[in-house]
Amino acid sequence: MLIQFGTEIGNFFRETFVDKFDFWLIFGLVAQLVFAARFVVQWLSSERAGRSVVPFAFWLFSMVGGLMTLVYGIVKREPVIIFGQCVATLIYIRNIMLIYKERRTKQTPDPS
Image (tube, rainbow, N blue to C red; front, side, top):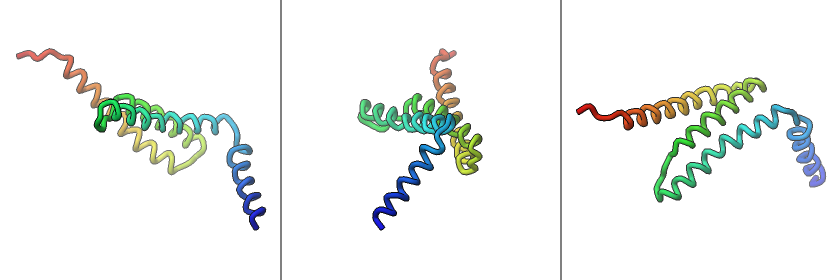
């Protein structure tokens, strides 16, 4: 029984990571790494500030990783990934727009 279980686990990993090894698997893995990098950026920024901080780079990594994951979902025809990343990417883009708007407002001299 234990040997059969080990064989099934081995077959699962071979089918999942070896048999399906192609450009899109690499692309999808890189997309996940870019997406996950946002948490490292957020954590390090918060540690430096001594409080919870969401830096611009967090939203940038979110958008790039989300768009890459969306492309992967479209190519692989994964409706859950497509739906999730479409909605999430809109939120990331909106946050970036709000940051640019705030920065532009701060740079504009007060006319009074």
